[in-house]
Image (cartoon, rainbow, N blue to C red; front, side):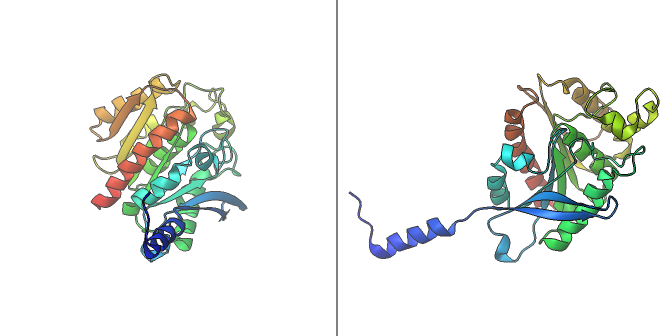
Length: 272
């Protein structure tokens, strides 16, 4: 049997009990545009108290979800916060906001909330890199659409963006996921739907204006619209990582996918 000397044993135990890892907070933020409080999960890396500043990845949930979906479905996010030394923020998108400022219902201003109000709150209350060079945004499904849409529209805020199984063209789905409640019925507001589809926002980009990573499962019902976005980005010579993997519209797929996004964003942050 291996015998440890007492001082060495004490040292090993101290390391074991001292290594606490990432911490998970729930922040109560305020939206002035919507005049209400909104929750967000904030994951801080293990070294957070060491006095430096950190890049931030904003991670958006899908339709039907809420602010804590990501940490419950993919607790591995805590290890990514430690591994890549970054802060992860998961805002609440009110189930089916589609992260837009609704043109038909002024009570829904989730573009303003996430891209402006939440970013300002996080920069004010946490030790962040307060620059687009230190901010990335991604999400799954509705959140993938939201992440790209917000990044395309707010390139002064975000330097990198991603989408996992994103609904990047909403026009083929006129009766789904409360989109009509946010943009009005498609038959009466087709132009608004097209303007709010990521696939039609590519003209907002120039080569290398954003670092982009996009992926989708081969068996996903959003596979065709992701291929359409990829083709549009290729046509406009916009550099991007594009990956098709086996899998469908499932948390199992997203738990795997999010690790690649965190690595991509970490490489972006380190390059600046």
